[in-house]
Image (cartoon, rainbow, N blue to C red; front, side, top):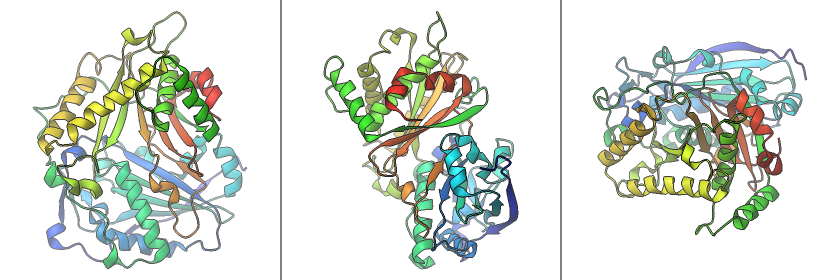
Length: 445
């Protein structure tokens, strides 16, 4: 591989909806969940091999224009008060670029060093933060062509406009529109109702800002990929089955791997002859399809995630070695919150989110303690993102994240029998994690 790899920008333009947005849809109201989302742009990069059916950029742009007629808020801009999106068809930013290497050469190195994927993020994304996000395009696309004809398709979205579930759904549907030539009038896969169900609120008297940055990392994050193959997951299940008393439930693959990872991460926070640091692991849960009182949110555009905080206390240090204790803690914490949401009203769900935030991030006990280490576990398993076929096959490599917080992203292997984990961690934790015996026993990296 050419280690002086250079991405060269060829052009930038705006892709607008094929049909103008009707007057009555010009002002899209954001929801409470949009309001409390992190103020970041979150990129995703999909790498595609050369294929005879590779589409020209013009066809990719044209299909994006068609789908934007349905996804009209994406082509808009945030209003000055940040409570709505002005849908004036300003357009999605679309960048064309080339890179001076072949995809196969790149993949050989990137599978070991995911940070090599950073140059393929849409240009300028690393400079987007709280000071300029609300004047930036809601969605930015960059298509980078390799010397061999392979492609890197990067999509970055403004988190205050939508969550990852929405983004994955959009990319998957865009690919189908592109591949099959779906006409604009037949594109209809999302509802735009969250601003009505969960209206924007004045939070100045309800929520205090975090005592400190809390979830934000204090130093540079690095990314690394770990693969739990099918045989390793079977061995891991045997380990769960053989330890101590019965759990009373069969942990899922995600629950087992999350338990193993969090235990190893907690270990990595300790040093010689010192206590392990307290930790909060945020476990995002998608509410779509889980609330029976308003099933119309199943395909809603926007943010509809509850981050369930799961806490490791100093008092739990002796229990930390027990996989059963940790997996039960994760399972029960998630079940308690989901059970409260199943038949809840929108107001009850909002109150629940506010209480979780106050307890875990704005209070002095957790949010104000700089020694508390924050991680997020985000499971993308069973999402169709790996089936995203624009007409040139499925992606060979995916890269997630914004490098703003410590996250481990779980997604299915290509054959769907194993799980891949992308870890975004501070280097001091990553080095220890890679030497952890559990990780070495079950993961390939």
